[in-house]
Amino acid sequence: MPTIQESKLAFIGGGNMASAIIGGLLSNSVPKTNITVSEPWDVNRNKLAATGVNTTTDNVAAATAADLIIIAVKPQVAKTVCEELGKSWGDRKDLPVLVSIAAGITLGSFQEWLETPDGRAPHIVRVMPNTPALIAEGASGAIASADVTAAEKELVNELLSSVSRSIEWVDKEELLDVVTGLSGSGPAYFFAMVEHLVASATKLGLSKEQATRLAAQTCLGAGKMMTTSDEEPGQLRKNVTSPNGTTFAALQTFEQQGFEGIVDKAVKAATERAAELGATLAK
Image (cartoon, rainbow, N blue to C red; front, side, top):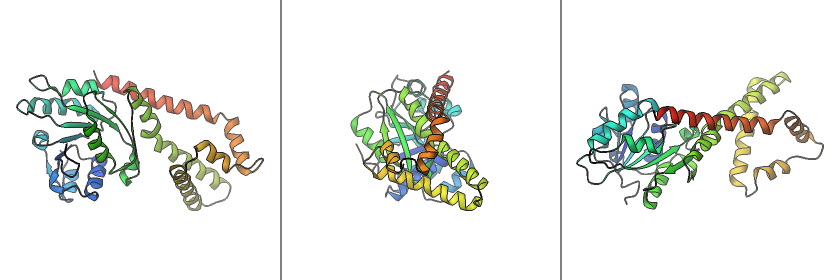
């Protein structure tokens, strides 16, 4: 199995997430000539062409010689794109590995849509990245079809590590919906928390600019502590909570207002919505 630097890569779709992954690959010495992007929108295509990668509007042409294909289109058009690709591979002996970052679409749907005229289908990996991938600080969950080999998983790891600090493989497809509810939607939870921290501090007299800088850096610093510490988040919380101190008073308020239950309901709601979208898109 070739390494990511040796592989021919095709991106079907050239939006923000695809552009982020391509940028990460280029910064990790993947040759520009090994990357082809099929993108219908002139603005996106021209922006990617400026990086030196190959660009086209023809999905089949982009995917013809690829070892690894990344489906990065909107979920609503994924079926059409995949059926087009599958029909074009009738004469191809070795099928590519396909990675989907299209939210919600199941492995079963991809296997059905990508079936070749002679009844074969590529090995498929579904990935749920999150928006911090845009600054190479992403967290990604992944699930592989049963035929994906260890070497193919490693190739996908190399792909994702260009933009993700954490890559977690799950062994049940429904758990990718949980990943969606946790890290896929998770950045918005932290943005909302900072938004409300800023509003509260502003009401108490700080300028909005000061409050925003302090809250954002606090969020960044706390995240950095969690990713570099051997201690669990609960212990880190205890470490900064003096009995009857200021932090204790704030956390008591969280507890009284049912903070644990609010978070639990939020993650469950996002998880259930991800499952609903997957079921709808499969029809």
